[in-house]
Amino acid sequence: MERKLDPMSLNHLRWVRMALKTVGGWPDHAIDGRPHKVQCFTLFIAIECAVIIVGEILFIKNHFRVVSFFILGDVYISMALSLVVLVIASVPFFERYGIIIREFLCNFHLIHFKFKGGYSEIIFEKINKISHYFTSFTVIFTMTTVICFNIPPLYNSYTRGAFTKNRSENITLQFSVYFTLPGFEQEKHFIVATIINFWLCYLCAFIMCIMDLLLCLMVFQIIGHIQALKHSLRNFPKPPIQNNLQEVSTGEKNETHILIEVLQPFSCEENECIENKIKECVDHHLFIVSFAEDMSQFFGPLLAVNYSYHLFGLSLLLVECMQGEEGAYTRYGPLTLITIAQLMLLSITFEIVASEVTIYLFVFINKISWFIHGVNYC
Image 1 (cartoon, rainbow, N blue to C red):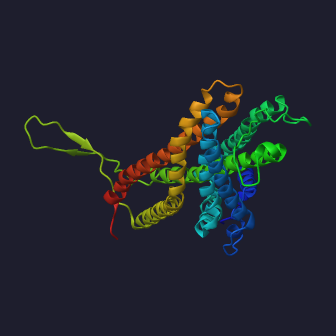
Image 2 (image 1 turned 120 degrees about the vertical axis):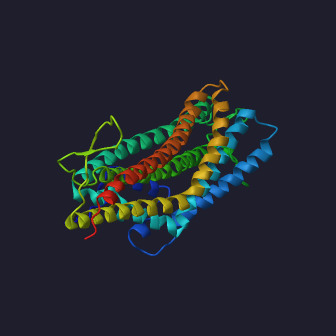
């Protein structure tokens, strides 16, 4: 009997939900079956990103000929990240996002097919273990990146007397995110600016990395379904082979006799069984394709924005790592690594999906020939 299990009972999905809730990216309303509604916190996140982008533009305008090239590069990186975050923060505004996540959790996840036993349970356990370790690594490394990006500027400002009572106006303070807003100067409100910067870095890191993580977890499930379908096709019933080999004559002099195996046609009962199995495979294929197309159509523009950032931001990050300043590797190293890891992961994951689809279609074409040759019209 079919048993419905809750994917949110899995640890790694609970972590993803908790992380996305802190940045307004989890569609609770859709999963609970409530009407689409933009949450106030999600709207606040988007407005905050837009305000910070304006502040970074004002900083560049006011300090373009004053600060060093590397500080400007830092601001350009922050502004590029802010633009990406603004795009991702607007994703929950779309009703389609909640529909896709609900479909993923309520219908597509492999946990709903675990009850079938056999290979379905094996592939679920395998994908679940990969997803668990991958989620753990992503969350830990993302948090480490946030800390490493904020500690060097804070430490440098501390050594220069940022927290002293009679702070000199001639000292140069460092910030993880530089911005200027009307009526707010970071140097005059150092502690407040530092807290805001830490929150902005947390928001940026988690909304980008965890949203990519959620996308990868969905792709892992697609790969699991493809593996299950390939297994079904590879174990497709073959028509029985006649026990007695038949000798074939070519009619030529000094001919070489050829022994061939003769396939017996399926019986009426076997035909019905084969027909049902083909229907199951076709339905499973259409189920996979339907979900993959929904994902591709909705998340495709988001991936394009991500790749654009990788093209622009990664170049600047490598330049910042080469500046030689104390703390540069500590600050920009993890961010560079996680950017490269995101680029590699997204590219490799979708390449695996494309190759898996090609392989199982090839298997299907070869296996289906057994049915065509063995069919017996009753």
